[in-house]
Structure formats: C-alpha cells, structure tokens
Image (cartoon, rainbow, N blue to C red; front, top):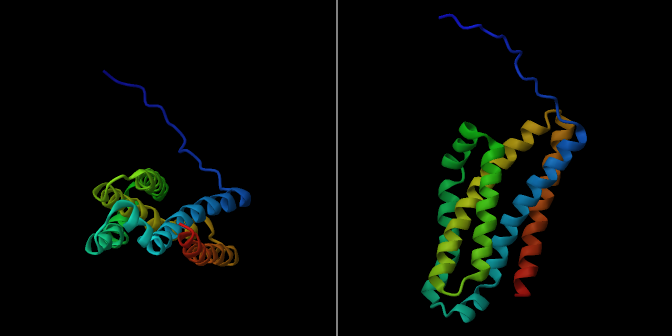
Length: 172
C-alpha cells in the first residue's frame, strides 16, 4: 500500500522584534533578581530565622548550605547541559517555577526541617534558572552593540539586587 507523501515547508521562525527582545531581557533579569535577592536576604535575616524557628547555631548553617550546595553543584555542568538539550527557555521557566514554589514554601515553613528542605529545592530551581540566562541573552542580542547594552543591564540588575537584598534582609 502506498501512502501519499506530502511535502511541508519547514516552519519559519519570525525574527524577534527589538521590543520583544528587550521585554525578554526584562523577564530574564527579573528571574535573576529574585535569585540574587533571596541569597542576600537570607544571609542578613539568619538571626531572625534562628529565633522564629528555633534553629541551633549549627543547624542555622544549613539554611545557607541547603541552598548553596545544589545551586553550586548543578549550576554549570548539569543545568547548562540540560538547557542545551531541552531548550534554554524551557529550563529557565521550569527553574523559575520551581524556585518560586520553593520560596513560597520557605515563607510558610513552620519547622527547621521544612525550611531546609525548601531551601534545597530553591537551590535546584535557582541553578536551573541562572545557568541559562547569559546564553539566552547572547542568543537574543546578536549585534555587538545591543549585546553589550543587554549584558550591561543584566549586570546592573545583579549588582542592584545584591544591594537591595542586604537592605531588605535587614528589615526582616
């Protein structure tokens, strides 16, 4: 039995407009801002966390380490590779959703163990998100002058996020 072969033209992807690229940059920067803010807010707010949840000094170190270990361990090798294999946008959005859900759980945590578990999940989401951002920026902005501006905006947001995180953490 013979089947008719239909020829389909390959899907053409329309190039992004300048406006949509800059809107994409805003989303990417907002994702990174959340991650940077969180790291700094928690570091400054450790004393309040210790008092509210009854952490021991040794246990309190795990509030930071439970985030830092998966974040550092997964950031480049695994998360970056997943972005290459599955698509950077998919990994960015998945990581951001995981990070956001874990952040909500951190805010609702009523025991030290729950906070540490949520921080671990936050670290995984943060690594997934952070590993693909620069690759996405470089892909979005291929013209050198625009790319330099985009990376400058991204760098400014990172620096500002670190400063804001320290100030916001002091208010906790």
